[in-house]
Amino acid sequence: MKQYNILLYYCYTPIEDPEQFRFEHHLLCLELNLLGRIIIAAEGINGTVSGLKENCEKYMQILKSDPKFSAIDFKAEEYDKHAFQKLHIRVKPEIVHSDLNHIDPTVQTGIHLAPEEFRQLKDQDDVVLLDVRSNYEHHVGKFKMPLRWTLKTSGIFPDKVSDLEPYKDKKVITYCTGGIKCERPVPF
Image (cartoon, rainbow, N blue to C red):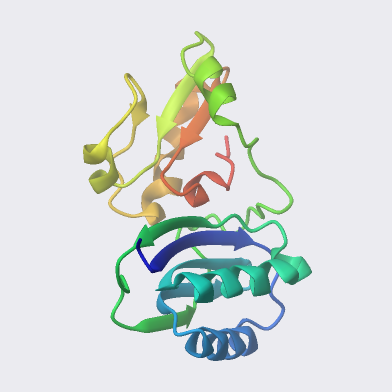
């Protein structure tokens, strides 16, 4: 049985004082012996950490007990050791760089689809499937015939939006690996 977990998570939620939150969050992670990378911004949190299963459980409980993070969705995977060497917690302007920070995903966002809903919609004639994952993720696997952008970073996303003009009368379904790149709606 593997004793460690790797947690992948993000949550768009207002954080009033990101620097203070970073300081307190850093202490929490040290106390729980979590290692990894966490980005804090006024718009929320985005992280990947590893630690002993019981410490990861405590971490998830502590975050979910804060009303700001009650809707946070953790993806957990068992692992046999720490996946990271260090703990890095940084304050940045966005939790994922996109240059779309004028769009607040807590106010305006796309519709989240359950896997079965996605399967039912993806092949319909009035639907365009847009793969917004990184180049590395494209090579891991993909759906047949998606509209695929070659994105080295999420920051290129705004420059590509005009490519969707021919599809403005269709439903555009974006997909990505962790979900965070799909939170901000495509602005036509």
